Image (cartoon, rainbow over all chains, first blue to last red; front, side, top):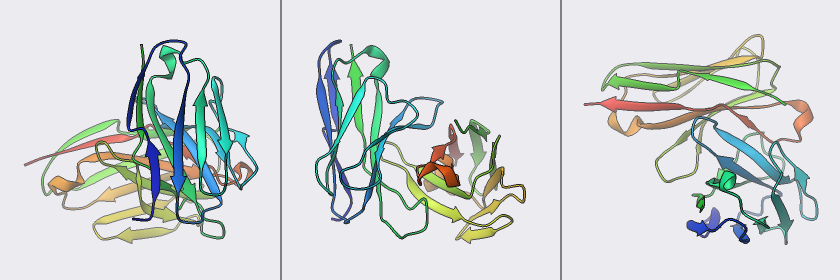
Length: 114
Length: 112
């Protein structure tokens, strides 16, 4: 089925460990985004990629890095996980030329850092 | 950065009742959107608004883009159990390269 696929769905890390969250879309969308969701705070933008080969910081980029591997894939890396990074992470994509806001979200990665 | 104030934070209503929630911003947005998130899933777009004053319906949902471009509301009529979830407003402004700013969400519970 067409859409945004995130892996893994759940992850528990120890403080200081590293990991990469994977995101892939099969809708030929140009723009991709990483958000984190915390209780009572909505979704906050971590990084985005307006097109293949470009990435930019969002509202809360500290502690994260991203890679736009190709048009389909946009990964988020935590180099040294901290308890403050416990959150639900969502990847989204949006096609070029469409009206703004037509995001398709993945089902999320639930990360706990202990 | 942009800030969106969404209210109420939570609502408990009886099945069949109407619901209203709103968002206000300290700055102007060019686009207002409303998303719904079911448990364990990502948000799904419900309604998009692109012009100040625009009133748009999608079934039992109606949303409006405020004249000042700093606010929007969402109404749900005759609520049903499957309306349960978290509703988010989101705004996009011309200087943001299309990324969205989200409100903190309204948790809706529909009681039978």
